[in-house]
Structure formats: C-alpha cells, structure tokens
Length: 170
Image (cartoon, rainbow, N blue to C red; front, side, top):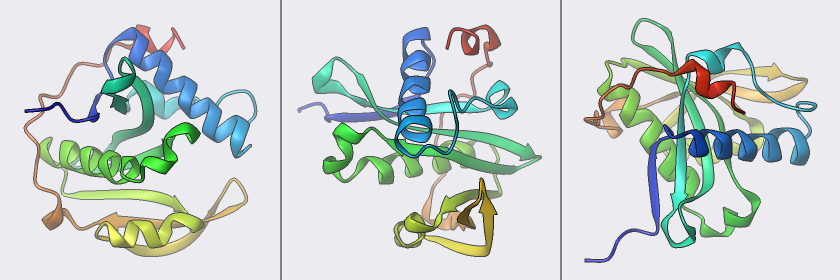
C-alpha cells in the first residue's frame, strides 16, 4: 500500500509551526498584502495550526489553516491557504477544510464557522457550507459561513496542550 502524497495534521513540532507561519506570511502578507510584515494576532495564542504536508518533498508544508474555539462548542477556521507552488494540486484546500472541521467536531464542536473571502465562497458551498451573511474584513468582502456538520464526522484526534513558547519561535 502506498502512502498518500499529502497528509493533513495538527502542526506540533517547532519546524512545522515555523513553516506554518512562513506559508501564512507568504500568502497573506506578501501575495495578498492583507497584512504588513506578519499576520500573527492574539488568536494565535490559543488556535491550533493544521498543515498539509507533502510526503514526497520531505514533509514540506504545502497548506495551512488554524482552528479555535470562540465560545463553548463554537469553533472557527481561519487563515486557510495553499502555498502558490501547490495550488495546481487542486485538493489541498478541500483536505485542510475537512481536517479542520472534523478535528473540531471531534473536540465537541456543535457549530463551525469561518469568514471566507468573496472569491472562495462558491468553493466553500461545494464543501457543504452555507453563507450566513456578507461582511467586510480588512476592507475586503467576505462571507460569514457555517459548515454542515452532518457532512464532517467527528475525528478521533486527541486535543493537544498548546505550548505557547513555540509561537514565539516564529
């Protein structure tokens, strides 16, 4: 049995977390210019980073997303992105969304939300999400969207303890 080319998992090693932030910076600061310098915020202190790893390229981080609990059992996904070199693969965004929602669902999530850039709304709808409202974030149009949890079975991932010292390494 061959190993899958891409694996989706919680980033836990110092190197994975460094690479996670590097991919975020490349997408949201350099490419999209939504943020200047870095995109780290207070949410990163309690968010769980998820990475898509390319197993054929020494587990290079190919895509990223973070999940966090905003109130009991209400979770958000955010900072979803795929490195420019991997966008042609076409399935990383879908895999990251699936890993994010099923992980949170396994940790007791009863509502999973995300603020989605306008150009990605149709893609999220195909992944069993629906729009709750149109909003503006960083002067850009977004939709607040909710995942259909019936489509995302709870994963059996143990919820790790956050090591905040690792965030400082970025």
